[in-house]
Amino acid sequence: MSASLLFIFVIIYFAILLGVAKIAGKNSNNMSFFIGNKNSNWMLVAFGMIGTSLSGVTFVSVPGAVGKDAFHYLQITIGYLIGYLTIAYVLLPIYYKLNLTSIYHYLEQRLGFTAYKTGASFFVLSRTLGATARLYLVVKILQVFILDSLGVPFWATTLVILIMILLYTYEGGVKTIVWTDTLQTSGMLMGLIICSIYILSDLHLSVAEGLQAMQLKGIATVFNTDVNSKSFFLKQIIGGAFITLTMTGLDQEMMQKNISVKTLKDAQKNMVTIGFTMVLVISLFLFLGGLLNLYAAQNNITATGDDLFPSIALYHMPPYISIIFILALISALFPSADGAITALTSSVCIDLLGMQRNTQWDEAKKKKIRQRVHLGFAFLFLLIVLVFKWIDNKSIIDLLLKIASYTYGPLLGLFAFGILTKRKLVDKWSFMPCFLAPILCLLLDYAQPFVFGNFRIGQELLIINGLLTFIGLWVISRPNTEKN
Image (tube, rainbow, N blue to C red; front, top):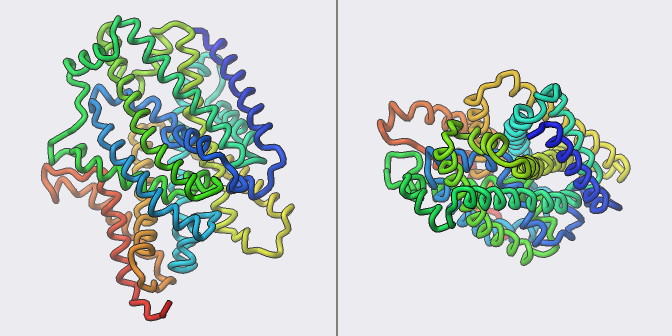
């Protein structure tokens, strides 16, 4: 497949995306940018958030991991569903009752100003590392399979992608990305379905016959019953529930879109819809992963892991499938990157700079500051992605993603302490448990072979992180003697 032809289709896709953004972002203001004027359609938000939740890494990595881990990822997805239901009926009522623009204002109202700033800072750190790592991995795929052959340098690819994101989020923010994410999620899912249909046809298999072939190959097992394994089913289900609870319910990027919906009831319908849809979509990704392994075995293709899907789609399939794959990959990339930059801008402006409470800034000045912060994050994303390129070590990326996930532990502890207890926090010391808990978890993670023998901590490390934060907050708190 010609790299130049693929590049032309990418440009056409960008032009369509900008057209949708221009229409959707018309007459936007600061509240449009932050929460879409609380007038977003819940069905559009739910559909678009599928793309945000999955990301370009999921598009490549989940199918690529089937050869090694079978369908074990579905265990985590069952946990996701439990997490989405908890968000819908525990967290969303709190957010809507307090009429929040930033969800971290809850921490200020319940625990204090230092706890509020600490929570927002952990979100900014975590989302910056996580989003840039995901961006790097997808840009790397585009670079290797298309742009290297055209002589385009890596830094230029990254810069152009970030400029594209700025062009359609700079004015409209959430109001715009609710619509662009819908377009991009559609592209990603169409790519997933079309690639699956093509492979089934090429292998002359029905869906049932494909599943049977995967079972015979031993790659269709869902539940891992080895208690010592990191992927033991109870660990994965419980861990998945807490991952969703924290990385969606306590994440400004995800909740920023959700609280842009007009009513609590619609926001809850959004969350429940996402939960069940995610189970279906991840199942399709795993099925595609099984098909890719069958296709690779039949055609003597040696690529594995993250290289499996792109290698087959771009080198062993017809040109139209290559085009569909690249467009679907980009569609998976953009919802995670555009939402991250928008949410980070919102959190810095509202939580760290105090834009909403500053009465001395008029609307024009607020807009100017918000736009500068937005540009600043785009530049920061560029620098961090280039650092990843310089390091060029996948294990480093995995480590950074893991560190990023650690930062949700303190958020879990802060919100759990506020919701589950009525104790009064000594707010000036609230940052201490939040910083110590991830460090202790990092030490525990590396020491576990010496401490637990063959037993391995998996996704539940996030829960331990939150529990340590909770205990630390309890230690620096006292009974609340004030009468309501």
